[in-house]
Length: 564
RNA sequence: GCCGCCGUAGCUCAGUGGAUAGAGCGCCGGUCUUCGAAACCGGGCGUCGCGGGUUCGAGUCCUGCCGGCGGCACCA
Image 1: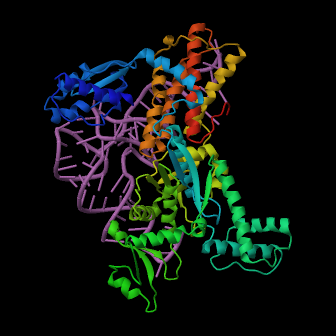
Image 2: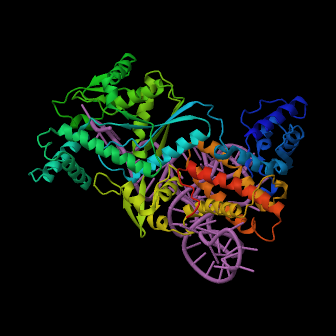
């Protein structure tokens, strides 16, 4: 917002003119949306904050700033109010003219340049292909993909990435489970391995294999079935994600980090920098841990994270010689940084917090600046139905899949309900509310605003009416208030970006619709009592409104229907 | 026990250290002869978990309790 910059200039100018004593002017001058709209759109409490520095009364400081404010076309009025607020009102002509600015920008309306074309990567979902996506993954993907949309809108070049592991024990069990299902489908006696995957989906894939290959896979090793299972699972996962508007640019296989040697190279580098030791037990282990140790326990390789503020050191390589997830994870993030991204966003469930910290410490230990890496941690999802809670637990095989949820309430509702919560809050997904297809459901309330705009244009077109050469000064209070609301979008975007808070978009969308519907009722376009000039101006406004609703819905990954 | 997140209206939740704390839902009552009523209009709801502290100013920052959830693996 350039208002903050102007206020800063005004402070400097006031000092220059001896209207204010010399002091260091803060880089960031606070400006906020006024919560008293009758006093103007924006308010700044800066004078009160400077009172101590300047050793003057806040009111005097505010007045000095106001007196030296550089002129700007969008500022209509700047008023000082006790105890020291600076209230700024937008210029009315500038305001109505923004309708044209929005229409001219069209689908790119309110695109910002904060990212300056820098490269950002959003890594999210990253579920291993062992089963269908659950609602936990859904929250992950919705936060990630919306964040990606926001980053694009503020001027980043964005890539979506999905990280997966198709090599571990889980995948072997998956392959063996499918093998058993395949043999069963052929009528051969076979049982699932211990800890095998119970889900019906493997039996289904097995039937498809029979249809495709007949009995020819009968003597194939489990590895063959792992490959088949993985392909089927990924096809499924991609289909599920596409259904809620999530697509990826890159699927990154953890295994490639082993193949190109970077996992072991990472270990060597950590060792060279003195962050590694080999021991049966971590340094500083308690007596209790010592006592639990079996006498023939072998050495593991440890990462001395305590040197970087951790409570205890972490294992890099198990005594079996196999790395834990920590080592490839660090190698992976080194890889991300080496690919030249300026910003790395990683969406993780709250239970992965230690993992996030350890990766960060790994990068630090290797001499990288972890600053570009930002992790969005989100809390768990609970489904509520009939007032009862169901907790998600993959371990107990008691989970609701994303597909079930989407089939139940629809993709747009899933996206909105999940987005409309701060990631740091536990999410209670109320199925009964989500199923509601009426004004009780904010999703339809928002989308209906777009539908109503589309309706106006259908009618206008049918009557051969257009909005060329509209005189926007004819717009009334309701319309102007709505324009004010539309103009908040860039601020919402900037804030959602800076705070990694995609949910702000959802709340804004509801507020915008809340401002729209009363206007729609009152401000008619194609009505016998509305003069053609006025109708043109209003139609022009609805054209901008339609653009903004479409823009907001698309940023949230939702559809902007013309009819419902 | 230690660490993290959360605690704001009946419910689900917003709330960048600033002015009189908000929204949706729920509840009650009204409104369709003209662009879609999935809408509009009116009605009330608060010890911001509790106690200290910092500040000109605290729901917001610090601290101690209380409660809910999660994490404390040679699983990922």
